[in-house]
Length: 339
Ligand code: FO1
Image (cartoon, protein in one colour):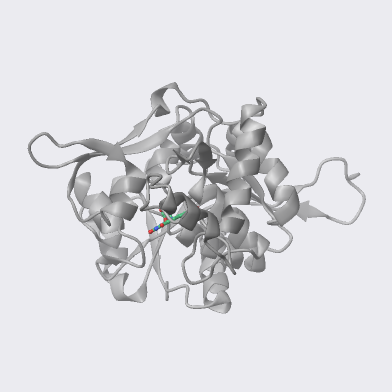
């Protein structure tokens, strides 16, 4: 809940003399996972073309493969906003070939369950080269974004290693990397526990806390509340910084099911029902001030479990850019109303 009573007024940009025409910049900070967040950001850029948007990206999905550091959620935001994404998959590069993958398979190299395309490999090779030279992930991400020009500032949640691990249910449940659970097992094997390994020792990356505290509004796009937004909030300092701001979230669940991905498997793992109301209650009124739900879930607007959270119902399927832009606009309007 925001502390000050300050209205959501776009601020005067620094250095503009008071008597000049009123030039203001709205600052929006978005906690982002992968595909859902990236698609939402396309609409947000359209809804507020003059705004300064900072994206705090989840790095819990990151994995080292063949000696290369792969950062799926950062890359999905960068490729999607930069125009290089494989639109159908929502991850990886468009126009891909898989010659390197085939050569690795011919050697019997493992793992063989994670598809890396030839163009995508270039991103991981350059990232790994710069990391090996001692550059922090935030600096490396800035270098990669110089090519893609995503039109937002993309910050990893932390420069320290954090990896989401899943403990499989059942006797002697193994602990495996999130990607193995997600990609090889399709999250079909129930998870007894999902943890952000290393989060407790991680520090917010440079600029992350300032981007949150300086924001006029913080947005939770329709990302996975457990392994994307939950992981970002697990980095010490981030949850408290966000809770002090006006926060509007977009439900990733419509009509009791995730729009894409397998957020239901993640929610079940932490004992949260797969519903728009349950996810909002999971975040709680201490964290979020507004919550957008689909028309199918408009009963949520009267749900007593969501006291303290302003709920608005509207079409929430991001079927195309105009629809996504309307959703992004609605979040900003609600934030303005709650200012
Ligand atoms: N998701 C899959 O379901 N199968 C894959 O083979 C796969 C490869 C892959 C390669 C690079 C990348 O950036 C993402 C990739 N993803 C793949 C998506 C990845 O699992 C994401 O972490 C999830 O979409 C959750 O955000």
